[in-house]
Image (cartoon, rainbow, N blue to C red; front, side, top):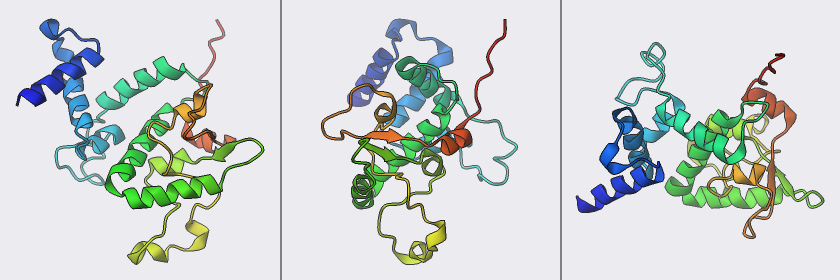
Length: 207
């Protein structure tokens, strides 16, 4: 119990919230961050905007209120780190980050196979890797050997030109960071066609 309480206090400090003056409106966000640090599967539904209290996703979840608390918090972090972009692609990147992390912790062997597939896509001249966060955000992954019913997917439906899982955790910095890490010295690039699917361009204020 003491360890859990200490973890809670660490989250408060990371969020720059004073423990003796906690704003009640931020309690829900703090709880979600605590669950996120514990890698609860419930968090994946929160980041997708689905209800996370046992509701069915494709029936009563359609008419329910979207759960955007955690997504809004992560968006503010991305705006702080990378700035606001002309095309709003951060929500898709955040969802893709969580799917990649899920594979990293749950199905590590497949994730390692996908990492080798990423290296096979490296453009030696430009030192970059074509990346598909749109498919990854939807849970459509590639780069590993499928078994069972999943192995029957036709070649036309497989993603072969782009990488999905296998990138380091928090791979968004490999898209925007000026300097790349030594252990993964390749930049992830997103094609214009994929960017158009990820978000609309923000309108300029003529005034």
